[in-house]
Amino acid sequence: MKLDIDIPSGTDEIFDYLRKGGFLCGNHPEVRHHTLYQRCKKYESGLIKMFSELGFGLVGEDDYYSFSDLNETDTDSTEREKKLKAYLPFIDFHIVLTRVLHYVHVGTVFTLSEIEQSVLENISLSSRYKKNNKDSIRAEIAKEVRLFVSNGYVYCTDTAKEQYIVLNSFSRLINFLSLIEIDNIEEVKDEMQKEIEVTEEDEENENVNS
Image 1: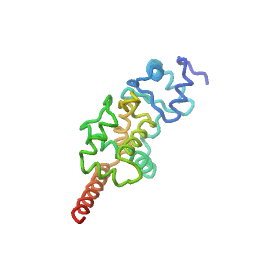
Image 2: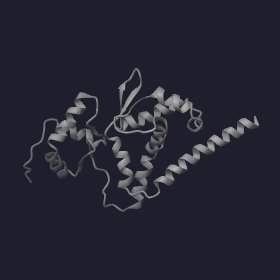
Image 3: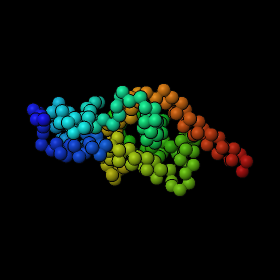
Image 4: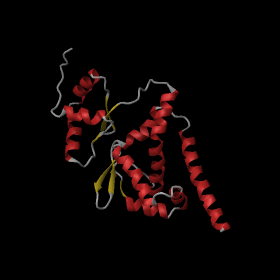
């Protein structure tokens, strides 16, 4: 079937980027990345048609583009549970960021030092990291931030200062929760918080007894 559509140069690059699960974000600092985003935006209707013929759903929302990975009509609880487990590490660290930065949104800029210092000043948060004795708190935080970077939710704007910016794709994490209709997400968060508080209480008891 012949498609009467207008597509931009670099479409192969756009496809290759998105098919790996990446995002093209409007606030990404890299020039080439931003150029591809602008081309997606300009030729959106044509690209949607073309990628659809290839079996991929191009989704443009909240100033970012991605290939859809979840059918909104899918009611398979097993699939939703799998996706929830895949997102839990992000939800967990998002709770940390929110407590440290008070409010995390697209465009938020932070450094590892800022997060580390705030965690060290907060007993419950520092207890969360002390459960893992293999790495320092900073190393653990860096590991979690790298997970966000590798999945396209944040970007390192200054390697020397270890400074990062939250990208438009971060909205995906927030939208995901409502998209898969997880009714007990607050319970999930509460369980995470209880785990932190239990660890803190055990540590205090240990200090009293020593």
